[in-house]
Length: 180
Image 1 (cartoon, rainbow, N blue to C red):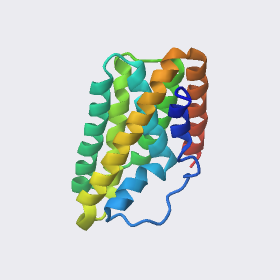
Image 2: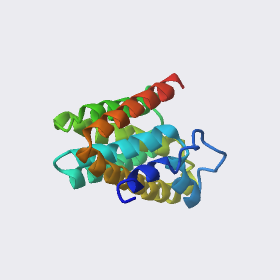
Image 3: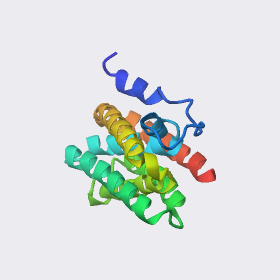
Image 4: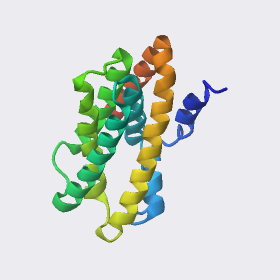
């Protein structure tokens, strides 16, 4: 059971494939948002797995969270930009490729950069009056998803065949996200 728990945690939000109607101005909306979009869910858990496979997992996780926060602030100040949604979809593809190949070199730091686009979207799409509550919520849930991915990644590090299967699943999910 102790080996299966991280994988079971990844399945908890399985049915959350679309964004339900929750307002962008509340803490609860921020807490739920990363769980209700396949792109956010896969990018964050994937980044956690990549962190576990790498040499500096804490730095990687903190850099990912910091990039999301900076992105949210920039999105609030500057609004959406062309290609933002494509970068978000590509982040899932990048996560899948890195998990599949166990790629942990300097290029793996692309994930925190892509997390910037996720944060930017949150900042650009959120209501101005509830920005801080929503941001606190999505940062808390993002942290939990990164740590869940990290726990799964620790197990995948020990089982290369499962890591390849997980990476293949991420790549298939990326195709779904890219298809829209």
